[in-house]
Every structure is written in structure tokens, then in C-alpha cells.
Length: 114
Length: 110
Image (tube, one colour):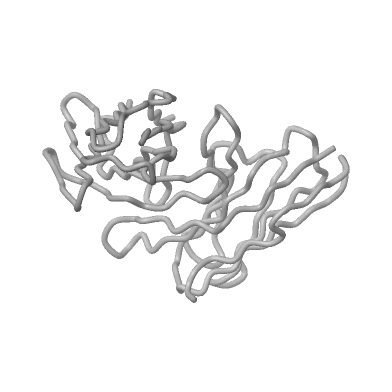
């Protein structure tokens, strides 16, 4: 089934630990995104990539890094997790050059930092 | 910073009624507008998008765009309990990125 796979689904993490959230898509979409969703704050863009080899900063990039070595994978790394990074993280992808830029979302990764 | 404003709700409507969800935005240069639905504990899924002023219909859903007044709305006709969800308004904020509103919770009572 075509779509986006995120892992892990849920994780509890001690503050100060390093964590990588994985995202893989099989739709050959050029663009990929990481959003975080917090109660009362909505979806906020962390980082994005318009094509393999390029990345850009979104609204809330501090404390996060990404890489885009190939079309399919877009991992998000928290180098040293802090409690304020407790959130639900959604990976998404799209093909901006083809009609409307419709984002397809993964199922999300719920991260708790203690 | 492009801003997208939505009433958080909840908006409560009885089954069979028309639900009207509204969204205003700050950037007059925005060109594309999207409505996503998000059930509790799930990821957002696209309902429809609109580019041009006026109405766009898809089944029970109608999106309305007024660029002069900088608002976009979503009408849901014959609302069903299964329509109970949070509805997210979004707009293009660059070549590929979308900026989302905080969402409006809709509750449809049987």
C-alpha cells in the first residue's frame, strides 16, 4: 500500500537523550516535511525538503535536524531531547510540481520527553 | 509570518444540518487553500482545495474562497455524526510548504 511509514509509533525518552524519528515514503514524492502538533498550537512546520539533497527550516526548527540522502527517507533527529519537545510528530510528503500541493501525512509518532 | 485564523470551537450542529467552518488569513499573496479533516488520534487527511474565488463543490462539501476579504470557508451539508472531527484550514506559504490554522472542532449530534 502506497503511503508514508513513520517509526516509532510512540516513544518515551529521557531528557538529554538523542532520538531519531524515521519517515519513509513510497510515492516518489519530491517534497517531504516534518510537523509537530501540540494542543492549542496546531500543526507547526519544523523542517522540510523540496528534493533529495536539500533541506529548509520551518517555523520551529531549533533543537531538530534533518537529512535527505534520497527521495524516500527523511529522518528527524533530536540531538538532546528536552521536555518541550514532547509532542506528536507528523511526517508528510507531496509533489509540488504536479497540480495542487496536496500533502499526504503519515500516522504520526508520539514522543514524550521526561 | 503567514497567519491562518480559525475559531477553535467546538461547533455543535444537529445531524442533517449544514455546518459552516470559517478561516481567515493574513497574506494577500496566498494562492492555494486547503481543508483537512483530522479525527482524534489520527493524521490529517485532505478534504479539498481551492484556488479561485467562488465556490467549489465535492459531494456534501463546498469550499468558498473570497480573496478580497481574505477568508475561506467549508460548508458541510447534511452533517453526519461521522463528520465529527477537527477541521484544519491551510494555505501555501512558499513553493511547497503549507501553513495550518489551529483547527475547528466540529461535533455533530444524532
